[in-house]
Length: 355
Image 1 (cartoon, helix red, strand yellow):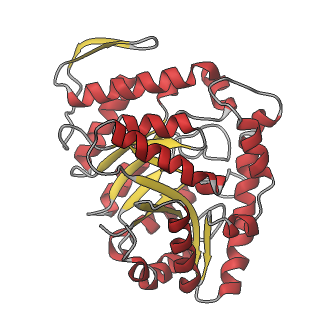
Image 2 (cartoon, rainbow, N blue to C red; image 1 turned 90 degrees about the horizontal axis):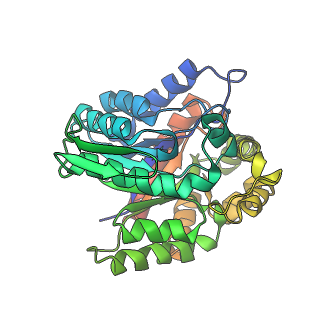
Image 3 (spheres, rainbow, N blue to C red; image 1 turned 135 degrees about the horizontal axis):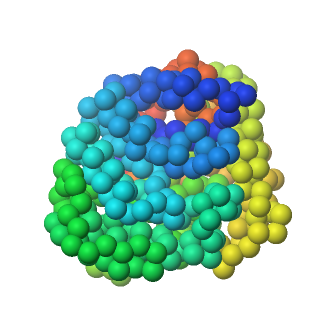
């Protein structure tokens, strides 16, 4: 199969800049273009309390609306955070979305990484990995088993039939969100899940993807697994105009990300998050130019983007899905739509040989 292209929504604004009604209204307009333009998936996040992601406390709500604007696009939670949710509630909500969408859900899970969220929920950062592993396993059992039981460290249930039952059997595909920790990539591969990652780490991504592929094979799963990488994308037939629009919005997005994760820079630490202060510090030094140069942002003409995609694909040893932020920070809906149309008209056919 050829590489697929999806769209994702990571709100990075607050009420002073744009209301939630305006943000999600614009997002749903763009979602309505997905089938027409050949984008095969729609994705959004779960975050809280801060302009970095805080407009999206429940991805299921948005994806249920997105299901009504599409007929074919897959709907991806990118991602649900088990650390802050009861698995009984998560399993029921995911199966309900699977039903509403006619079996188009793909369920992504993440550990969460923002210390302020853990503090607000009263959850220890040092429990992150344990809560995550337990939560994903419990949701899996609730979706797969007609009668499920599991006693974990944080949640337990016995002889539960979770309703509704999933439309896809035995359950929707699972994805694991991973940033830069090799153990997260290995865990995803070993357990037979797809991996969702962010190429802001630059050249390290090649090794992380290989770790995932090796773990996938070692786990005895058929094929090579599935890798979805997230990129900021802005396409325009005028290279200078593309940069003029994308540059301030990408740099504002990066600053807001660092602000949301600033506790790591202020001395927060946890054995579950080795090296995160260094990761956030490195992101603090990123610019529009550095992101484009390392292939984490695809900005420019269709020729430029096709070249960026081909080069990055080769540099990391290949991946299956590119998931695009198309309206990052305050890019207007008209510009985002024009970018999606320019990309769809010219770029996918140039990359049809990439797997």
